[in-house]
Image 1 (cartoon, one colour):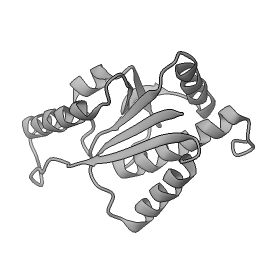
Image 2 (spheres, rainbow, N blue to C red):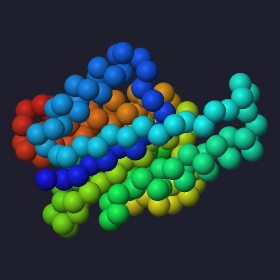
Image 3 (cartoon, helix red, strand yellow):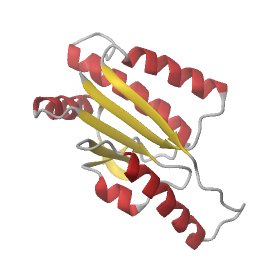
Length: 160
């Protein structure tokens, strides 16, 4: 069974996000060992400078990199990443499992994204869309897509 970790900067606070996340975590339980970890988002002033943002990204990035499981393939969610269809992501995940990979970690940054060092550590930079979404919603979207990946790979009718 595949080990999937999702490392997120920031905590889900809104009930609609936590309920959606819980539903997909429950659904994924039959397909993988899922570990979801929330790391603290760096506090910044109301209107931070670019230098303050960059310093916060470095600190958040170090925390993320320290939590990547040994031997895991890292996937960084970032706006400049590759756009993949659900079927393409399903094929990619299936190929990793066929190669004997047992652990994949998805990295979701905070409201300012991910540090360059984190993106460089990833085997894949993945974009959900060219549109901008809140990082909390990206977590829900990723959970749903992972569930969809497993349903596609088992040939189930969830993905039409």
